[in-house]
Image (cartoon, rainbow, N blue to C red; front, top):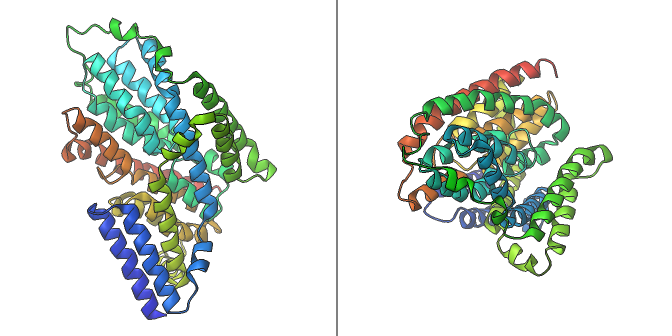
Length: 426
């Protein structure tokens, strides 16, 4: 068993190193690593590859696939661009008011969407709006990355790591929202004035700029398909209603998400095939591979060893465990994609969650903050960087870090204090 443990651990570490290097596709790397780990389990007669595959959290995979379908339909309808243009008309094109309105809209949007689709939907539109207003779009993009990540903290559908941790640790979704939503709002209230102060000099249009032309644009032209627009609105309402009443009826979130997503596909008529082709299949296969690796780590006893090691270091103290689950993924492991970090640490959160329900919630907060504290580590950051580079105004490492890193540290401190206080009363 020791030899198998060493081999599986070496495969897992090697996989993370290659992913960090960004030389090879992270999905291809993870799938290959999963197969190698599966081979070790077969050779040492621990379990068959089929048994390993069967132990993958398919419930989470189904949930994420369903949400990707909803995002594909909603994003292609132009619904969010329509709402954004309505917001601009409400601000009369004044840069600071527009900036604040965009951040609040991204915050609300991120309660329902992962930061990646949020940036895919909003990023390009944000650049176009800022160009029309003749102001620097980089403060908007950097701020949207930061806000979209911490806004996702209280929502089970807010990010992929949330889904992983919620399913694995058996978190009560209603309790999660009640506990973490106030934290997320506090973070927004604290963060927006800091961002406004930091970008005060850049949120100024050219002296000759006339925003009236932008305000003449009718929001209706943003709607690419009225059919998909109404379908998206109905689908989103059904999702929210389902997630609210589902737990009380004992209905799994994955079932609610998939029935809504499949219904939206059915009513998309002939566009269903093209929408399915546009899904982020690499995200799904990456997650499958990472879950497979976690299963391998668990089968050879390494997850149990991790839990035992942390328990020894913390002495069973839940506050030390919470600090570990906040700061390790939030800072120490922030250079790694937060999905594998969440997948590896979720069993540890589950173990301590039996003692105090706030412990696994601290891992959710830490994992989301880890998505932006180090630049260009996560896909949403790369989307922002790519959009800026394509427009000839690249976001440098220093430019991103100068605001994201101190804000990330502040957020980690806020999360630590908040969760410690809540844990005393739960």
